[in-house]
Image (cartoon, rainbow, N blue to C red):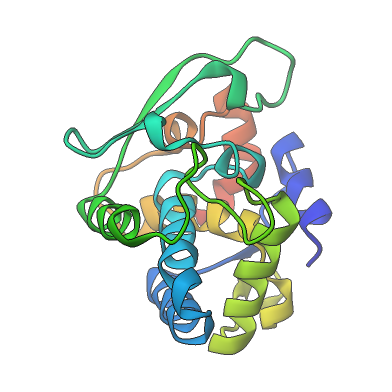
Length: 208
């Protein structure tokens, strides 16, 4: 599924494609295995961060190293890097708690990364990855892992997986693999402007 189609879900359509946690692990394993040695840590950290936090791809490429506080296990996300849906309200500064595995992955990456730059994720050509390069990393890893996502039509194909699929997968994980979460918790994690957007997008993940 093209990323432009996935992004429509921010405006209220149901999420069409998502992954289970073990499928995300398969994608991480594949990117570590298939990437050039000096890019493997970056690509694994990128996927881990997107899947942990639910960042949109444009937000992910905007993250700077100084926004991380790995001692506290927090990503401090300034308002200016956040894209607010479904309206034009000014987004708020947000602190996103990181999973311990994500903290470990980021520490190892930062201790060994081949290029120093203010951006957390530099590219081979510049100091910061583009949204297109992130899409390529995720798509190529999904193809290499031969992961078939879950969709509203049944099982999908690896070609349907992109960075926004990871964001949908956060909602699936919270509602079906982590105890006690509600749609309101998903609203806070994904930083939707209202719970109405969350309900329209993810109500089919809330098991009956």
